[in-house]
Length: 93
Image (cartoon, rainbow, N blue to C red; front, side, top):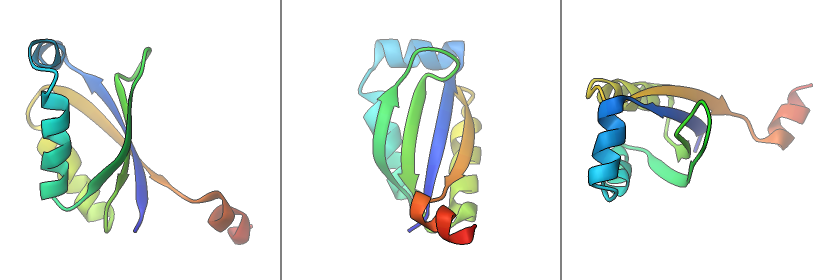
């Protein structure tokens, strides 16, 4: 299944939500699963992005739907990058 890197920057409202309800992070992961993908790894980070997620999804359309759904809530901004396994990348060269 294709892998994607999802970079998340929380809005001020998103920061407040996480502060008041840290379990919301795992709830969002379950919502991603309901939309057809799976969070394989997740890190909270310092700097430009608040979270980095490794997500497996069947295709780019699924990831686009997830990004639009999450982005429409106004609690964060999402940037999604397709991830190519390094052996596959080398084979392309």
